[in-house]
Image 1: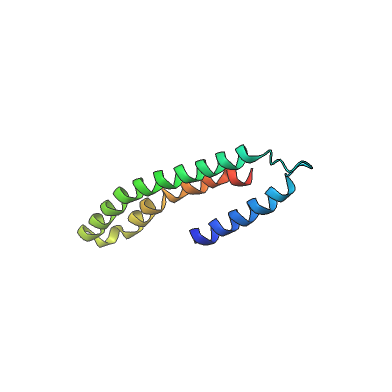
Image 2: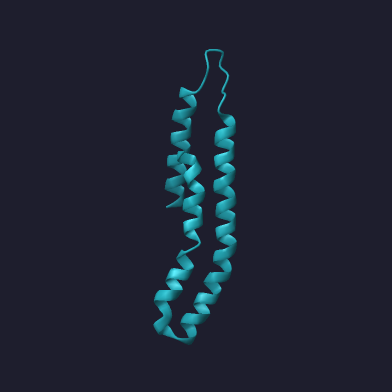
Length: 92
């Protein structure tokens, strides 16, 4: 899913980049896209680091008590919301 999202973002930025070129061929909005890319990258790295610890703890919790699968799934999915929030600057 991240590959599809990444492809859509790259296509959208390419289309937007063609619209923002001046008559002299100068691209003036490079900082906006650079900042959005850094925001998404850092959000993904942070979510990956947090999900590593949460995932191993969730597996241990399920191994001890199988009825806690629901909370383990919720705790594992929570860091992904950070990536979604990090992707918002791409569309603003």
